[in-house]
Length: 420
Image: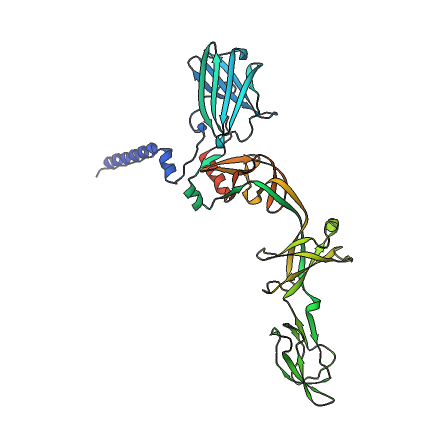
């Protein structure tokens, strides 16, 4: 085959591939991902007017719709034209209706100002709505409709379930104000037993080793008394773990403990309270103790605050007594304590796990059946789990609490941006 023939065949193949690629519609590619996005109207060509707004024309008459928000709360400003020439705003009667999610309607009326018509209502975020415009000029009425969606996407319920997206209603919560302290697990001295011989003598036998768990009354060792030469048993006075054994068979006993037994079914946690928190920490306050990796938690109350200050750290010890039947807390182990110093009942809050960054806002994504839309929030007090909402979402609104980042990614992929 000649080189010319090969080149012709290659060109034909490339042409066919390019033609097939150009014929693929966005909807077909979209369906391959099993999503149904509510795309912005800005994905279709939008004619712009002299002021950068959306230009809508019917016959010789047209309007340029802008949302002005430079240094002011966002508001509609509309410029009118006839035969490509500006029209005095006094000659035009105009109103706009915005249809938002949950079929909420905003009706905006306009009054003349300078060379434009000014809307009488703040256009609150998000600027995501179906727009209906009615204008009257020289006895004629003109109407337009278009979609201006931002921060919105549509995902079928079955797909959302597979993605692990979960929602709940925004509402009131008890917001706990906490302080985070560090500390260590300690053996409760009331549960520690130092086992000494009753009479001096020689150890004849040893029944238990270091690390053995014993019951009260178990024989630990047998000792021969120096005076009577009779054997007597050294018994465990409490249930617990042998944490020290200081004796060998054949050795003479003295005044030192031969065994130390610790009952670790309950332990102390001593938390360090520094000067900045001293006025907020007191006996009886609830505290959640967790291991440093956060895998284990216990809740109790502070049962004692030391009147003494540690010289080196200038901290004060706050004690918590915890049950430890499962043995997960070990003396000497470092832990954290989250002390609840106050509780505030807030009328509206969302979970911290729901928050995402969108443009310059902290947001959550509201859910309306299979439609998800951004809600820009004004936030107040917060803790590790909840954040108070001062404005931006209505009580009872379902919002995404788990995997909200997937909604954000889907919106960014669909191009639902802030477009006026």
